[in-house]
Image (tube, rainbow, N blue to C red; front, side, top):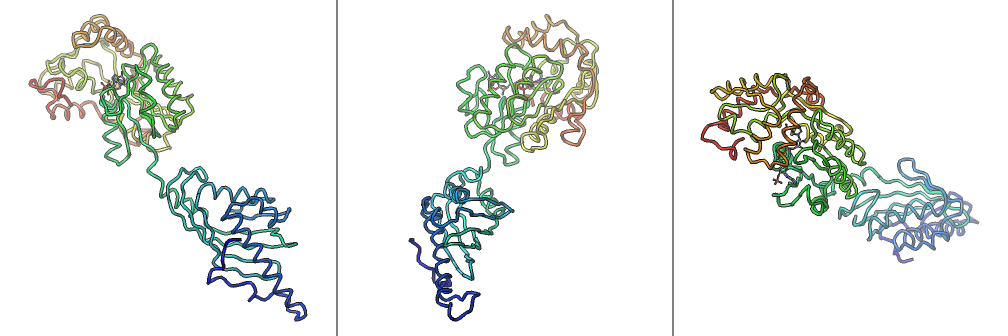
Length: 447
Ligand SMILES: NC(=O)c1ccc[n+]([C@@H]2O[C@H](COP(=O)([O-])OP(=O)(O)OC[C@H]3O[C@@H](n4cnc5c(N)ncnc54)[C@H](OP(=O)(O)O)[C@@H]3O)[C@@H](O)[C@H]2O)c1
């Protein structure tokens, strides 16, 4: 035994037993003293020094432990496991006895356990927290061994101490971080003080969908990912790429994935399934055609009074990327959105002709819709600088999603946020006021 009795510890030999027969008094005092020494030996040799071999000397074979929160464990091995759990989590664990009272076959101890949380404990990663845990133990002894113990400490307060000291979880990786939705998601997370890392080819943490060696480094320390794929989930191979990334993310410790998806796209459905099967907590944000395609991707034609694309007289519920970002951030930060598939649309179905009219009203100049075939649109996209291998599939995709399959409203924004989505006309008015469609503006400084 290595411990010395602290000054405020009541020495057992000053205690009286309930058996007050004067003939037996000396042995009574001895029994109390012996019992205290046995309990002390458990504290010093087992808890403080980690000597497992002592367990069998001080604990009865029929040992029974009653812990806080109604926890009951049976047998010396179970007692060792409890001690070992603490010793594994706190390499410098130390129990200091502050009082000891013996009476009959029982010993009551108060202890203060101290230690530094420098290894995993009850699933909580090391926090470096210095714990101070008051503990009370009543032991009942039989045949000079402890046969039953009742231990009291505030386990919830202990976990609370550790969780309070936990570094603020992991970070959130935002892919497509300079794009229409990723930029908004990143801004919102950072404004809310949520640690967030930008991931794209041009960001500090380089992330390239076409270079899988960039994925693992971007995932270090990450607990949630916003996945905005580029060029488009509907493109061939996209679902496998996103699925492989989702699997790697989960293997790297990521808990939550929020996938930006598109309505009416078969390839996107496959990508959604891969994310749903990844083992992460997932949220799918399946979106209608973005308003911002008219202000951030292809602002120039609008500036010059033309909305030219396939679609004819179909209707589409155009959607504000600010609504998408609000939903994505909610899903990244609030577990209640986990397992939800939100289909997001704007509040109103508009033909492309009506959308052009709304844009014209907002800008204060005529904007007219010009219908075109998919092939004509592909040629137009190449004219805007899109590589031919992207322009064709993009044009086809636009032709597909505007063929009437998506001509209905959905309530995803309301379901996720409890508020309606923003109307196209309100959005157009604000963008026009920002000057994004001014004739002197270029596509580079559009909002
Ligand atoms: N537009 C719509 O109406 C619509 C509707 C429904 C769904 N979607 C989905 O939206 C997604 C696109 O998201 P978005 O519109 O927010 O982005 P975006 O505005 O198209 O911007 C693309 C983003 O991806 C990054 N990027 C480009 N190539 C990349 C690569 N090879 N590897 C990694 N990052 C790359 C870009 O940054 P760097 O240049 O720095 O890499 C940028 O941050 C698509 O998957 C599409 O399915 C779009």
